[in-house]
Image (cartoon, rainbow, N blue to C red; front, side, top):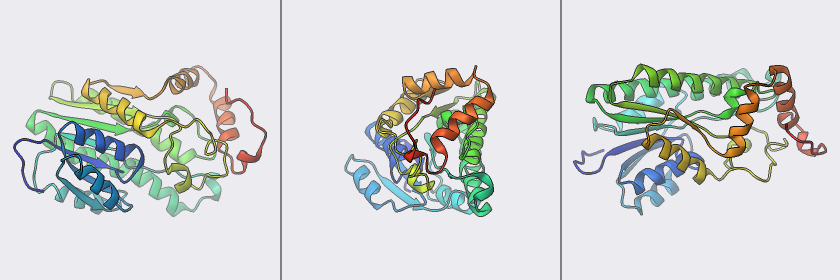
Length: 269
């Protein structure tokens, strides 16, 4: 990616669709050039982003691996990164004992290992430059014991905590860290997680990924520590902080258990 003295560079992972693509759109509209990455095809995203006047480079790679992250970083060709949107991640439905451990490990390596490796590599360069913004996509799932999504929710609990800790470590360096914590959002998440037969996947009032991305982008620009996207999600997190964990786990079971979409609707809280 060739240096540009006018337009800053933003790096966005998980940018082929959903929240990641919407974050890339916002960055392009704010005058950034883009390096986008995903483990899915990126041609459509790349085309739409170029229409906005951004110089765009795309890397298709598996960010569960260090090699995948290194390939993404190599595509910057040494150009300074002004903003990092560490958004790559995916879920996994069904009971833990019924999951293939290869799939379990891929969730952990994508959501945690690859994410923090990317953040460390980019964050070191930002700290040396004395400036930069990092937005990490966590989830309100990190506040809930996720029955039938146990590994995913656990990985997001790690990310939510990690982002807040890193933000504190970087105080006074000129580098900001913000955690975006969405709830149920209208993306390919549930199809990829094999959860289309669950109540949560069939929920009709999923959040618009464009609105979720906007909440995260604006919080990052205001240098906020984190943002829970949506008033209903804020309420849910507030309840999660006072409700006993066994009750939270049982409520999560009711919406995430395989086949729950066919059960009679019952209120979540």
